[in-house]
Length: 210
Image 1: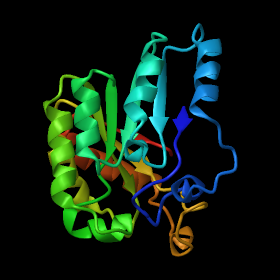
Image 2: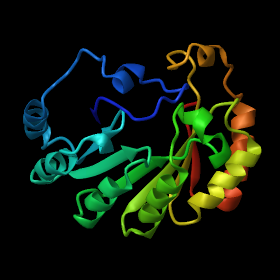
Image 3: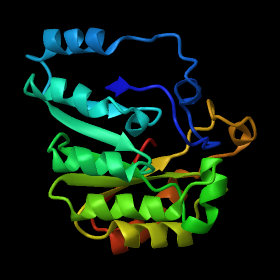
Image 4: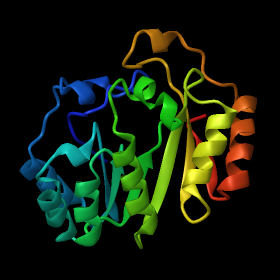
């Protein structure tokens, strides 16, 4: 797992606030990370690049090329806000798997991201991912104030039947917003009810983080 600093969203439920704000003190250079990968390449099959938001880094394609030279697969986690970067990575065959967050339904997106997220840009990213020949996943963190049964029904329809759709349990302990640290996560039974709804539209649905 490689974590990049910085993000253009401010999701109140995010549990990686130090990465979002770039305040994490454990900074390593790209060269140092690549040397570490070189040492381990006999023991790993691939690398996951996550964040923060990796796609805001303009040097991402070059960094991935260096990983590829070492014979490793690459999975990218993204919020979908940089379709031009996604397109470049997909067309250059630099990624084997893309995982994109769909935070909630579009009317709630400003609340869910703490930003003026451009919905049309996000839809473009979804289209690029679904029309690609690579494996993909859409993910939703099940925050009770932001995601309900109707939202899961709508989002799972976007995901469709080919890719993987993942529901994640909300972890309030280290949430970006203090208000969200006081929210009680969905119960085990409630999450499974949401999963049943998702499976009806996207058979490749799963639940993690419980």
